[in-house]
Image 1 (tube, helix red, strand yellow):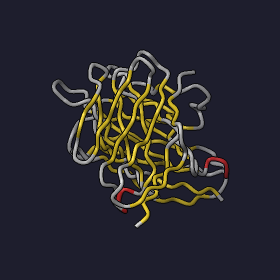
Image 2 (spheres, chains in turn brown, green; image 1 turned 90 degrees about the vertical axis):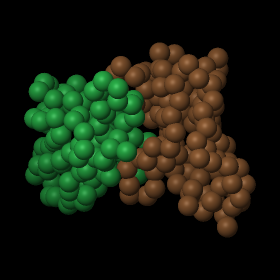
Image 3 (spheres, chains in turn red, brown; image 1 turned 135 degrees about the horizontal axis):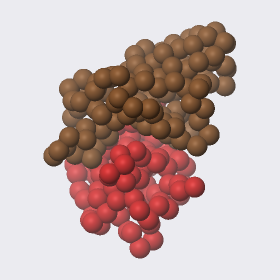
Length: 112
Length: 118
């Protein structure tokens, strides 16, 4: 079946550095992509989204890049802080359907 | 953003009993809600799509007679795990989306319910 996968299961960065988390998706019909942050024992928290008609979107300290040619999504976090330590999931979605398919998750650890 | 709540946050039950988990949208009407299950150190797996006033749509491999879903109002969906077994122990998370005109495509997630079956 269709799946969304992440290239690296863990990422460790120094506080203040930039972080890049990657994701591959396989459903060419997906038209909406979301990045979530999940802290231990909590539900996913929305970070940023992007529609398939865009290739870049910026938020506060975060940027999502979408490359539809190779079905690749990335999340860039600028000036990573200890509070950014969490598991990050990408999810693909077909807007009219609403349900999301989640990737495997990358654990981000920020070292002070 | 919109708020989705779940109750209870944690529940421990004995094998063979049934457990009901509630998912509520607090400040918007959710014609559709989604139920996910997450095992430790794994991703969220969609179990079913809950539709207000109609039957839920289950993902492949999810037993509909074991995981009963009821979406009786525009703000409440319930998931009942029937005849629970230890392998059903997991983190259950619901989400809701506002499908009304002009609403964003964002899905709002609840805080999750930790189920432990002994």
